[in-house]
Image 1 (cartoon, helix red, strand yellow):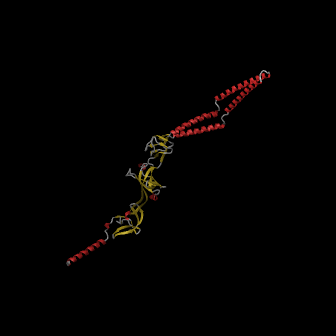
Image 2 (spheres, rainbow, N blue to C red):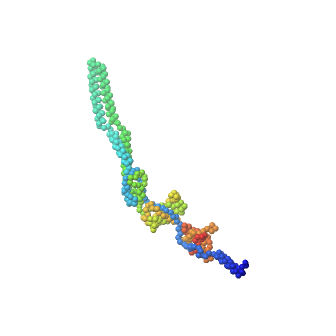
Image 3 (cartoon, rainbow, N blue to C red):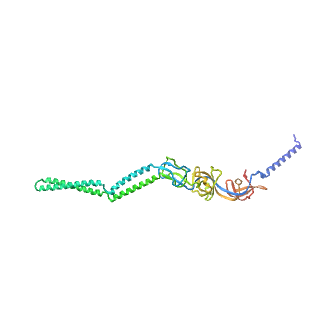
Length: 398
């Protein structure tokens, strides 16, 4: 069936018109309104490290247990104001008390023994030996008289020689007894030499020092405050046992606090002494505090799943609202620039290995290579390639 000529001409015209329309719409540039843009503008730009930290005393007094013992009483609570020298708690050491009692007993016994050494034998000892010596001397005298009389009888043939010899033996035994008692008396008087006396004096001196030392330790049962301030971080309870050198509590001056910021290892290289710090605490959401980095991290340590360096910072603005052991948010400004020309970070892309942005101009969108400066998580400083007020395309690849 043959198509009529007028119909064929009409179809051909429609096809040509459709192709021309498609070519127009496909080939023309998008309108500027198809892009999301921002104006490149100058303002301050800051590079920061965001992290967390803890508030701690700038000048604190640590209280340590001076002796081993049990906590008998605690006179102050956490947060209490205390003066230097005021009792904080009392310990009780049964071991020191028992040792002191033994030392006092030993010293008393040593003094008694030394008195004998210093003064010599007692009057009773001398009286007893003198009495024995007098009795023996009297017996010797009687034996001598009896012997003389017996010898006179023997010369007259009035007694036997055997009787004389018996009396002589008795006289000799009495003489030996007298001499023995005299020697014993001499030894008693010279019983202790100067060396013995010196040794006793040294023993008493040593025991006296031991007693005095134990008495000083016993005096340490009362634990005073090393400085005036506010008690915090009380570590013990009544009845608990503590060892010498154990931390009992800490004292700080209200308002005298500092910040210990925990900076992740990759950010440590950007942190320097003197950089500005901003501190925020969830307990006072409408306030913030400022400070300065005082001391950079000296080492990297593990904290849970993080590797961090501990950065010490002073707190300058009204630190009275901050107390020790608060966990806070920290922002450290590592670099800043006034009047920097900045664009959103999402506006910068790489074209042929070079940073670039897309700028909308009267003739359409143009890709412009740029030189970058400071980079923050939200913005990038443009040093060259863009002028203030230029309309820069955001997310040009979308």
